[in-house]
Image (cartoon, rainbow, N blue to C red; front, side, top):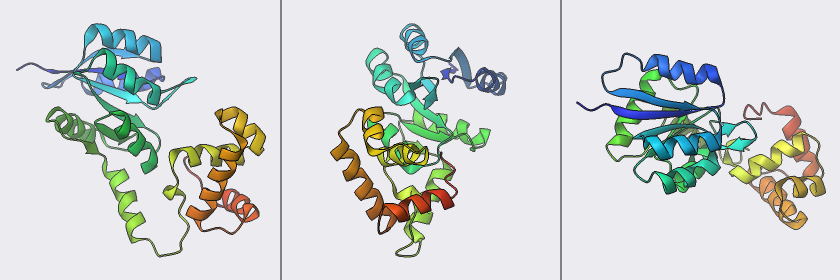
Amino acid sequence: MKKITVVVVDDHQLIRQMWTSMFANSDEVEITGKCGTLNGAIEMIKIKRPDIVLLDINLVRESGLDAVPLIRKFSPGTRIIAVSMHNQPAYAKKMLQLGAKGYITKNSPFEEMGKAIEEVMKGNVYICAEIKGILSDQLNKEPGEPNIKDLTMREIEIIKLMKDGLSTKEISSRLNIGTRTVEVHRYNILKRLKLKNTASLINYINTTDLTFI
């Protein structure tokens, strides 16, 4: 039986070696390439045309989000499974919107990665148990309770920059968006978190365990 070919894209050498080692004795999966940069990964995928790419979202000075449309362009038959430290549903949603077929957090057990590969190869979309659990918690949370996981991906970026002390103008420059757009996002953040004003938002940021930061 032909093995499922996989390319691992992660900027940590230890992670790349770990995945290779864990699949080394697999009768079904073969790691055919490893890369730590976006450009290198695209060139490798063009040549190897793997069945699956295990794609880290956070690459050094680059984003796995940018890689998804490029992989789909140069190797349309390759299926993408995002592997990330982020357990925010907004990240999973964005990756799936871009064309990824699976989303696994780095808290997921190895067995779940195998399940993700299996399901994606069948043509299904796979979301790991951790993300599903968070979505379930959101549906069951008490009305009126602020929840950082309700934020969109852009709002999460702005929260990060606010936590770092950046002003509206600085955030605008960093994200290459207008100051008015930043203000609209700040308003939406307050609304989603059910907070009254910027002061309460800053207090929330400073007193809440924002594990995604």
